[in-house]
Image 1 (spheres, rainbow, N blue to C red):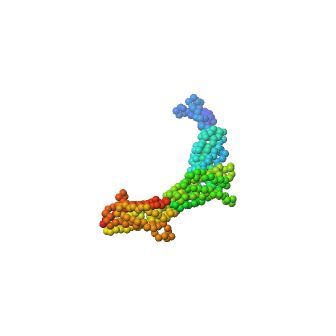
Image 2 (image 1 turned 45 degrees about the vertical axis):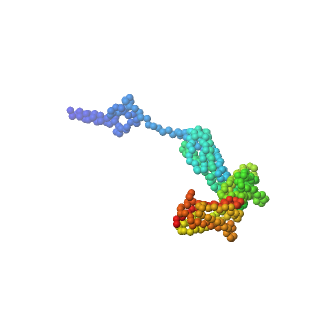
Image 3 (image 1 turned 90 degrees about the vertical axis):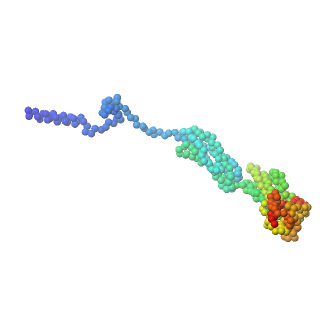
Length: 388
């Protein structure tokens, strides 16, 4: 019996060695991405119960993109006059391989994107944009811009700009003729200078002289040494007192026929002082003479100085009337001094004037009718209160 024990041990050892040879010492997971659909065990031999998971793969090929190209983005117009308007057209091309989309963006205050031919530009095609501007600023450098938005990822916006210099081709000095401190009946003449700036003046034409009637204007002869033109504006002595405002159009042609003529409007304004003025502490700004309150018996006198501003200083009185009837007046010339044309007006309130308030429609006035070439009458209103 004991003789068979070594044989049994040898067979057992061989069996163990065979099992070790068949089983790997460190089994690795399968390289396939088959996932078993059975409950727990994986059966590589039964692929009917398995599915393969596809992992996404990124493409290395580039996608089509639009690409915008602008031949020019700035335009210099040189020099222009203030308030003049102009425009310029820019070109945009799509050199990409996808549609280019354009959209109008912001623009500065004096620049307007007036036109965008196409908002969608196919590959290889082009479009145009039109910028318009008006020179509203004073003389000096000018630069304004407008923006176009694009779907080009490398250039999402393009700014187009226009620039130049604002200058007057000619200057008129003074730009507006204001006539002040002139009395009615006094003829006056003023000079206007037309000075070349951007070009030499060839001719000056007064387009409608009747527009400033009864004022007159005359183009003075120019000397060989002087490149300026001069106008003489005349105010006649027959112009009545009061405010006036006129406008005269002047066409100025350059000596160079290639350059265009320009038109200027000369404004003429003035205020001819009335033929007279009434001076007194009791004279209000609204032209009413306010008699101080009367509370004592007897007659009361009040005075004013009337200054004649007309060139004809002498007055011939035709009549002098006062209201209410209890007021009387007289006008006397003052002795001549350095200031001529002064008259003293004396107003008297009679002692029997009834008590009352004399204002508004119940007030009074002083009317002096004259024999004068331009001053027909002198008139102002009276107000007073009597309680005595």
